[in-house]
Length: 196
Image (cartoon, rainbow, N blue to C red; front, side, top):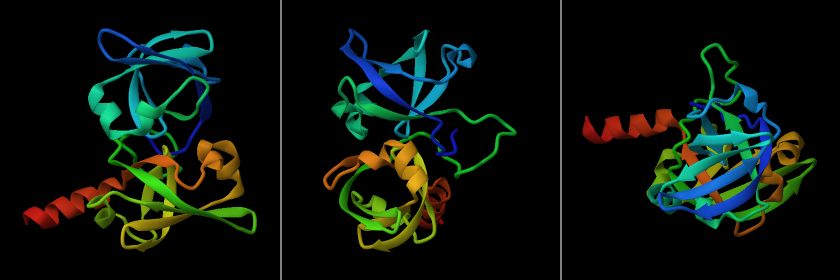
């Protein structure tokens, strides 16, 4: 589990096809002495398992299923990546409860400056849009955000200067594809309603 609070922006160091899965090596400033092999780390909102580590980098393997449902199939060497280590019991929950399971890929449809902040609107694949509500939570590229408004299949969020500067969201452009995870509570409420 994660909270959607990015703790480092890493960089893709290598992308390699293997006889098993796609292997990604990620450069990071995280203290890897406290990261065990088998640990979970969120990569732009996608939970991946550390399979190797060395000084200043670690490796993960990505399955075909994950590649088909996330933006990771687009990743190239040098790409910045939002990283978050898994939450521990007793940690501050600064964002919201995030599973690291990407629900779909959205598309940025507009970015507007508002004072020092940026208003970003994202189109969501259907039927995912029905899980998104104004003032609810959503994870975009692994970042916990509050939904400002929803109009059909487009939602808007406001990015304060800090979030814009310390995550990869400051590199977004119109047309950017982004990993989305809807709020877990919304998912279960919708399922309960469908089956009740």
